[in-house]
Image 1: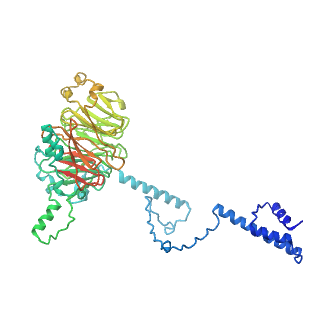
Image 2: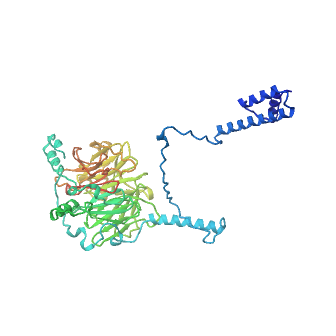
Image 3: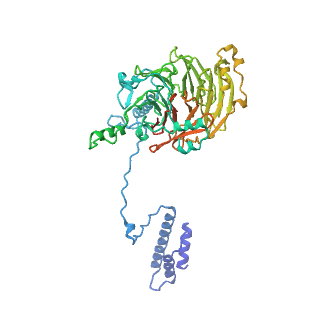
Length: 567
């Protein structure tokens, strides 16, 4: 048997499949020729060397194909630019929201022992209890002096309400070109007034940070003496801003006039006070119609508080008896005819009726009006037993609370009618004329006119309910005006809601709603746009917009907690 045959036979017996590399073939050929001076032992040795080299090369090839082999060093580039020194990247340590570790060894605890396992379980339970306590609502009364988390300290003797007087109607209000193109005299006058509205004292809205987090609710105090704005944010903070204060621009101007050097801090901020009165989002406000010094705040922490500004306390007036119950409240309102009747809605689809003369943890009625969340509701101003609700189930419904039927969770008020939109309805708001405005994710603002039923709804006798509250037909529930409007707020902007001016001084029903193009739109009940308020300093969507109830002042809040105020 020649040398080449012996090598092939040996490889086949060992079960090794070898690749015949050039070195291997050359070696074998040299062996096969076999010089006479080479002994048989030398031939066998050379054959073994060739076989080992071929096997080693095969193993290196297999390792390179599977990624296990050593990576070849890149050849140095001749281009000097490619040899620049790499920048050192500083790694930032990520903080995780988990219990902080402690040394068991220093505490004398043996690793992997029962004591160590018990310690780990105890630490985890303590962490979860701490997080739960932060989200749990506080039932006791809150002293505003102790609740201040930002801004000036609270002085009950010198608070903003010290000069508040009775409500007085006022006027104000679009672009000169829109005014010129208006043929209707009355509409032109409204646009002329609205065009005079200016941002507060010329100050940039970016400087009026009224709350630490995203604004969810906002409102004006009813007083007409000055603009007092309240805002509630995502974490339960309540911000107060007094627009009668001297603006930073005025302070600087006065200093410049008094001192040629103008040695004044250019970063002077407006004075704002912030209170922490809820543990979760403040979803809605309602100024008590019978007590101008009381503000009701509804929260996702399942409670409603009355902020008494004269006493400087935030009093819990409603909450479930079980503190761990999760019934996020989405709306709150007090009857304009009975100061003891409190109404609210929840994200669980419930409508609550609570008598303020009873303990805070007692609910007179809890009516489940929807299988999905109720985003907002409104009482008819003249007939508070008529309720409009807007729900995630895409419906606007009108109810009569004078007639309740059924038992338990099936107990419901009389449903007068409903209108279904293509997508969910965010909010429903009554105005003083009996019209309801809704904002829907189908990119419309709809106005439903029920003014012709006001006289029938005003009768409060229960026995005549069926006579004076006829069921509304599909045509009667249909909107009389549909305004195209972009309502696609997404995840980071508060849902847009159409809000009426409750007591318009000129008798013209007007509503405001945030505009995704960083404006606030103003419309009449007939769908005519009378203004689009904006300003150079507005850097975010003023999503939460409100009219003052009797003066043409408009306020709006952004996702960064900033306030825009037009007066």
